Length: 376
Ligand SMILES: C[S@@+](CC[C@H](N)C(=O)[O-])C[C@H]1O[C@@H](n2cnc3c(N)ncnc32)[C@H](O)[C@@H]1O
Image (cartoon, rainbow, N blue to C red; front, side, top):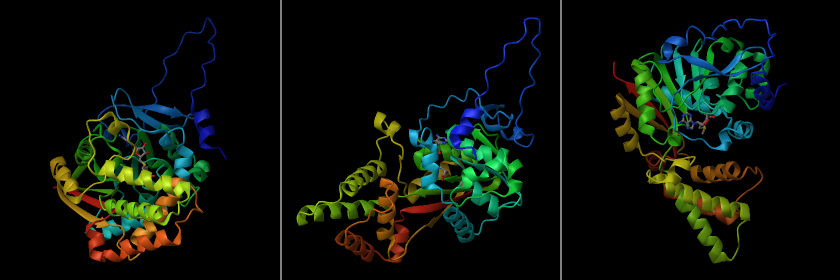
């Protein structure tokens, strides 16, 4: 089976064979995006990445003038990123819970715009299952990540690439997914054309999340919904828990495993930087994760963007929330599945857990679903 690297290699246009001297160059027919996609964009789509069999894996919009930067984890290290963060069953649950909690209804066989799709495994795959017959436009700045999904859509034989974790597209998906390399802040989509806008962990990567929300609202039909999954400032609680663990290690004279020590310090600094970022600095532009949102900030931006309603569904409020999130942070942050806190550090996180009621954990959510609705 082709790896992503192979796909990218075969995706490059082969060097044209030298034409015989007497042959007159014939006009090349333009390669057009599928007919259902063309009216959805304000500008023409051009092939960005093609395979030798001619299949366009990723489309782009020329001259979009984006100045947004993304880091290597989404480009050179796309395969590793996909492997580490693919969790489509989890995101399918979040989609279903968000829809149920808010009672929104989505049109049958909806047109969906997904912002910051990555490999699509956490948004496109769940939506395929939840919304039968959906047609979806997956967008991202990373052609490398989109290529995984594009290969899937172009050729079910490549499905294992994206399905490596749990995500698996149904065969019928193949004609219904188009990948477009596009800045989520660009607003290049035609106005009022989509039934649903989705985004799994995209807004907090944007220099200007207001621009992302404005683009989402603009793309929606009247009465349409947007669903985002984002981190919130409840991470501040985890910052305090990690600071407590570092202080306790010093008091005990028991140094932590260096990988854990580094991870805790980096997470504390990251949470501090993202809680109230200084957006004028060069450092902010190069920060990968840029924001930890508050409900009020999302509500204000959503209103400004043209949404009539903003609702939230916190993801976790269970008695072991901080213990569990601490363990997940350790695993994802270090990439070492077998790394664990010492028992006394786990006990500290249990103390933090015990300090907050379920309701308080909901109020101070770490991660949550945002459901926005555009006025009719
Ligand atoms: C945390 S990943 C999430 C990917 C995917 N939604 C998932 O859940 O696996 C964030 C994604 O946003 C993309 N991204 C960052 N800034 C972007 C921008 N301005 N426009 C579009 N995509 C962007 C990155 O390339 C990356 O794929």
